[in-house]
Picture: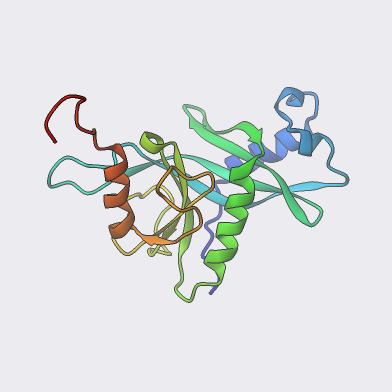
Length: 196
């Protein structure tokens, strides 16, 4: 089932296109793969980036996220060579930086996994700073606005590699299953010398 990819805000896309087309303006921000790319490169697969600030919400609340940016995968030829991140500023959406590394290939792999699923989803990225973790968030609300952000219990999270210890990368989990597992990863352990 094809994913319901949302169009990125036009200013976010324009800022990435400007950065890609201006080698002198962003020379320092170019990654080795972008500097050595042969032929044209293009931003594709825009994904809204949400942050989950608190894995364990206050009693009675549900986990809530906030939209912090848009990420574009940069295609060069037959493969993705880098990604570009945009952020929302007081003046609107603006280019932040280019990067490459394990999250790029992991995101591409997770998107391929999601496209093979039979249920329609809206793909997003969910950052969980408490665990230094990034997931592909497959949101069941395919028509939801990109800035709305409450992971539903039946939404799917696919941890990207590298994942924290005890959480397998690329293994899809329902939010209702993964959030309790993540909360165990941040729960404080017993103090040394205290009874168990």
